[in-house]
Each structure stands twice: as C-alpha cells, then as structure tokens.
Image 1 (cartoon, helix red, strand yellow):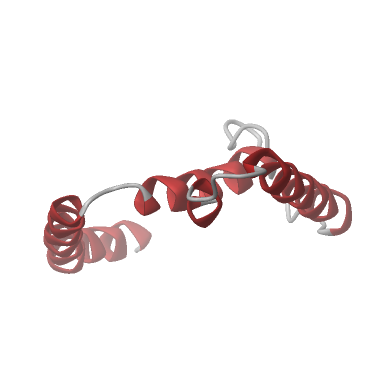
Image 2 (image 1 turned 180 degrees about the vertical axis):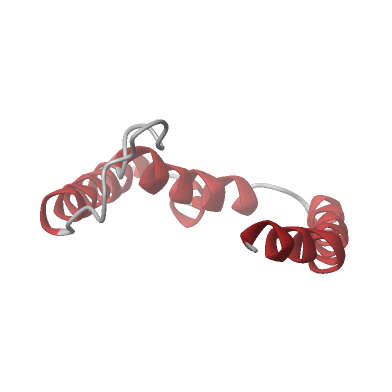
Length: 97
C-alpha cells in the first residue's frame, strides 16, 4: 500500500485490486482454517478481519514516516526488547509455573 501511495495516475485501480485481494485472502482464512477453540470469556473481535486489516495499515504507516521517526522507532523497540528479555520473560516463566 505504501508503494501504491506514490502512484499519481490510476491510484484507485491499484487500491481496488489490493482491496479485493485482501478481502479474498481473509475470506479464505475464515472459511478454510479451522478454529482451535472458541474463547469462553474474552477473545479478539472480528477474527480474522481485524488482525488482517492491521497488517497493511501498519505497513502503510511505516512507509509514510521520515528517517528520524525510524530512529526513534528503532530506539524504543530496542529498549522494550531489553525490558522484555530482562524482566518480562522472567515474569512470564514464573507465572507459568
């Protein structure tokens, strides 16, 4: 989607093709992939529609930011990965036992 955003002419045709492909692949996931279980108390709403829509939206947003934003994104990602490996992973292991 980010690459299609740069097109000047017939942008709507490309969006229509990508939108139809997204719709058909998500429908295929919904129809042909069996559910492991149905949630009893809480579950993600509109599965697989909402998760599959979030992927191209994220790609579009990442394709439309500048270099400084990528630097901040990389710094925060690194910091939060360190936090996860030093604290979150240990806490989730203790919770599992």
